[in-house]
Image (cartoon, rainbow, N blue to C red):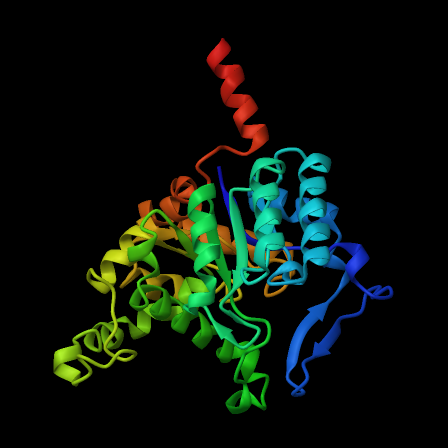
Length: 336
């Protein structure tokens, strides 16, 4: 089955007014374009029509409104994602939304998502609230994720902690968020998060911001003796194993983020094994037309065995339990 692992929605209750057929662009406090709002975000009937045309079986449903949000918003988004599962059997798979620095209440909500709602993964952003993803304050979050057996989806930050250099040309969205994903990957590995929590799988959006083109340089700077940073507590830190070990064992990368461009996927395959990639679209934000998604699926399939692995062969890297509708089919076949 083909699962879209970066598929967004926003509950109607969280959108002010009626956008109608308009595109409403929100700006952050620094005046940078931040988030676009439109009716496709809550029109799940249209989502299903797109999926039918493109041949997508199910979509893992996440909401920007619930990423690193307050408890009330997180709960609303989680419940609405579960409702989408019920309303469209087999088509949507709800993600958990819980603030990693939200304390005991947020961890309780995360456990509710796992045990009551059946969520297998939780979504956070690459940076938030002035903190980076390797901040020691997140350790209870990593503990709880490991205990619950959930994967973590790292979506690019919707608001960068330091955005001054991206103050024009819509650069914060175009490239700033991608730099944030690259840094999130480096921080997770070199801070030892995976050494302390080897069971944790992190799904990084947008092929980790297109990290493949930077990997040779990043690997070079892992040689702390060569670059003279050995002994420096911050700059000399690195994982216990080679950088690529974590790419092949703890990280999963999705194909969203490039507006359906197949060239980015081909470039990614030069450095990242197809066995660590999953299919994703970023619908209905970066792609909004059904036909573009359909063509994207077809172009990935044209990559041959690697493409088939990306489209459907790696679903089990993240979803250890089949979606409810798929699980029911498996049980029915077993009884025959």
